[in-house]
Length: 307
Image (cartoon, rainbow, N blue to C red; front, side, top):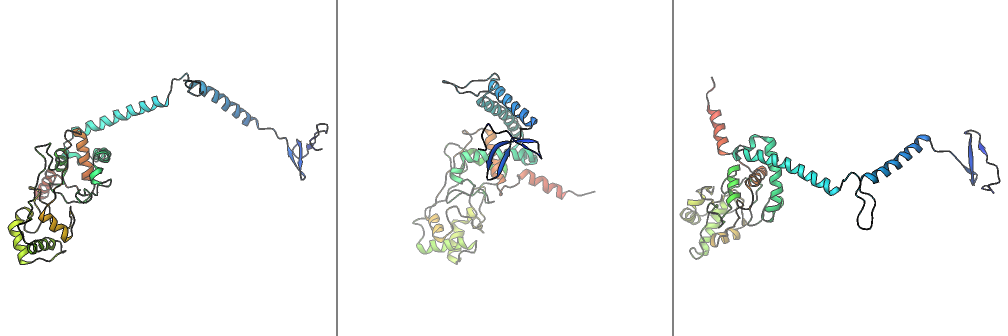
């Protein structure tokens, strides 16, 4: 047999290596030794593995694993990394706190840090109403557009977050109230008024009676062209952005029995820096406006006479 130990080992002439002695269908295997470098590498990895098990937690025992001579644990490393992150986070928060809200956009790097922090706070405190993408839903405003009831600059947004909207917990809460006209107008008059409101966006037909009703009952808050009034918190009616729906039936319902949403104030729930970061995040979504101070400064520069 080919593997009989009594048979003398044969040597492969081209390589000078002996055959193992196994043969299959005329194919034989050479007993080629491993390279020395490979053997030493293997021995080194074995030694490294043994040293690792001595230095670090490795061997499971009855009650717990061996702790290792280095005293290292994954939990301890995590705690150290969290502590380092907290130190860096507090440094950034201190910088944000030191900058006036209206001037936050002047430092792009710091503003982006504030936006990142605000995005995290938004996911915890605001998505329940405004949605994960801040697009809102019926009765909950979209924060991605530029339609603002009380202003869209950083300070105005921050104030709204601090004190809320129609929030009983703050005397400074944003507040506006539209009266209901149920029982004051006939169905024909309600239809005429709704048609006039929709005519601001081209979605309805106005009429002399509708225009008259609007002028006598709505113009004082919403303006002659439906542009709204931020001082009163009266929404614009000419931008096709509707909080409670833009169909004629929705407009009728809002005229008869208006809905009024409530937003809680966060001044007593979140620290001032977090509120400022939330304002930065909402401002960055696409509809943020320049602060009045910045706009006035820009106008002043443009109006200066050059020598």
